[in-house]
Length: 393
Image (cartoon, rainbow, N blue to C red; front, side, top):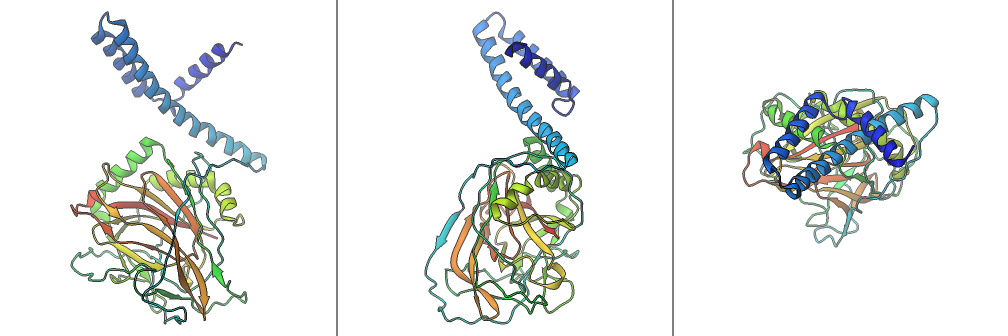
C-alpha cells in the first residue's frame, strides 16, 4: 500500500470509532463544512482557507483522542502479557527552586510540639489502565517522616470567611516553621535530610475532560464543606482555620475515574522519575479543593499521623475557569533536615505555580505548603481548584 492508502485506511477507521468522533459530532462537522462551502460561494481561495482551518482543528482533536484511546489499548495489552512498558518522558519544566536566609529563626532552632496538621481523605478505588503521556518533570529523593498535618474528611459545616485571622508565613520569610514527627513504631532511623522532589505533567486531561470537570465543580458549589485537618491529639478531623482554610468536595462522580485511569497509565514513569519503588495500591483518596481569597494550607506533610500513615504518593491536579481570576496559591515543596525528633525546613523549596490542566506528583512525607490565594472577586467560580489525592499502600 502507498502511504496515502495507509492514511486513508487509518482515517476511515478513526472516523467510525465513537470514542474519536461521536455521531453528533460527525453530523455537526458535516453541517459546518456545508455552511462554509455555501457562504463562501465561488470564492475558491476563501473556501479553501476555511476548510483548511476546520481541518486543522479537527485534526488536532482527532489526534489527541486517538492517542488516548491507542495508549489505553497498548497499556491493556502490556498488562495482559505481563510485560512492563518503558516510555520516554520529557521534563516539562523544572520547578523553580528558592533558597534564602531565615530572618526570624536561628540554625539552632529546636522543634516545638506538633499542632494540628492536615491531610485530606477520600474514597477508595482500584485504578484501571488508560494512558495519555504528557511531559514529566523531576526533582530529588525522600523518605518517610511521621507526625505532621494532614487533611481529613470535611464536616458538613459552611466555611466562614470572617473566622480566620491568621495568615501563614512561608518558611524563609519571618519565623522558621518547625514540624515535629511523632514517635513511630518502625525501628528504621529517620533520614537526616528530606530533599524536595516532584514530577510535573502538563496537559494531563483531554480538553473535553477538563471542560466537563470544571462544569461539574461549579454545579456542585453547594456540596463543598469546610476543610479539616487530621490532629495528632484528637480523633478524626477538625476544622482549624489557623492551619488550613479552603473547601472540599468528596463526591467527584465519574471525574475521579477519569483522572485515576490517566494516573495509572503514567505511574510507572512517575515512580521512576521520583526514584521510588513500584508498590501495590491498597487505597485511593480523592477530593476537589476550592481555594478562594485568603485561603491557604500551612506547612505540613500528608502522612504524619496514624490514620493517614499508609499514604505513599500525593497528586495535585490544577484547574480553573478561564480567564484565570486568582493569584498566589503556589505549591511549595521544601528541603528539610532532621532536628531532634522532627524536620525543619532548610528554607529551600521547589515552587509550582498553578497552571491549567497540570498535575504534580510527590512523596507524601515531603514537607509542603499552599501559599495564600488572592481572588479579588471572591466568587466561588473564580477559585483556585485542584483535584488532589493520595495513593495508599
